[in-house]
Image 1: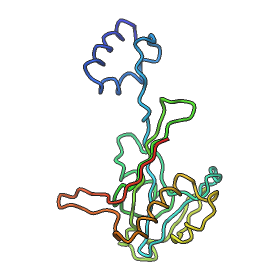
Image 2: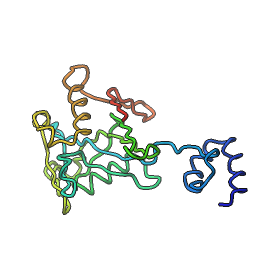
Image 3: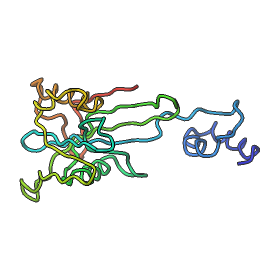
Image 4: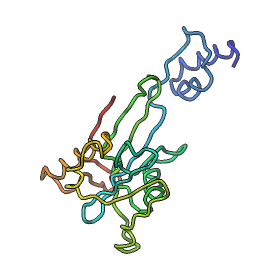
Length: 208
């Protein structure tokens, strides 16, 4: 983009922050320093799923190429314009073969890259329940693709798991979820209003 055209863009930026977020990160890499507006550290969003069966067990995965992470919740980055719940359903199916239904967002983590302060990711943690339409045994049958391992863990087993065997960010989410269920305040972490809106009674947030 030529400099004189960039100056026109600057006027648009002053009038609309939305314009900046759409255009500047793509075209303004060579702008003069005095005109530079730092990119927002929220460039990506990722979704992980706390999949619970009717026995209260939680579905975990271990990816061979990231085995140093230990056991994690299934999940991953969203596709362009993909709703969060759709990402959760897709990633659970891809990584475990289990059909699960999203219930609510119960945790959010924001992480900025160590060496690039303008690059960041929002991690949405989605509570999901197994869909039993296909029958109990078939619904809980986890079939991992090549390169993945899957297992159903009880909450007690996850509590007692060695920290280096449980991805540390996901362990924080589990401990918050487990504490909520043990608090006796409610057996549900969310409720649904008449218009279909969801209220999360439990919510965990962290930023680093």
